[in-house]
Length: 86
Image (cartoon, rainbow, N blue to C red; front, side, top):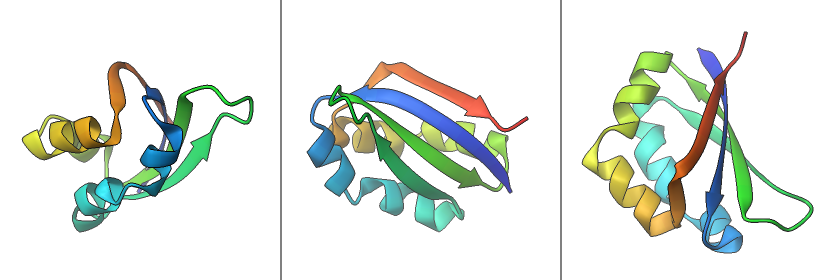
């Protein structure tokens, strides 16, 4: 398993936090995600994601299901920044 830190902005933080879409998308792929929010109240959020491998993560993000989940969750795709554990 590999650990990723992923940061991005969303339209509504509370909606994003409550969304079941992360588990629906990542769970069947053996991925888990812990959610984080900016304590200063911005729309920036983060995830700590455990993935089988980075290639699987990248492939999952290219699917129609991922695009639909991001749209449902109000994710601003142009703001996504992913970091791989060194």
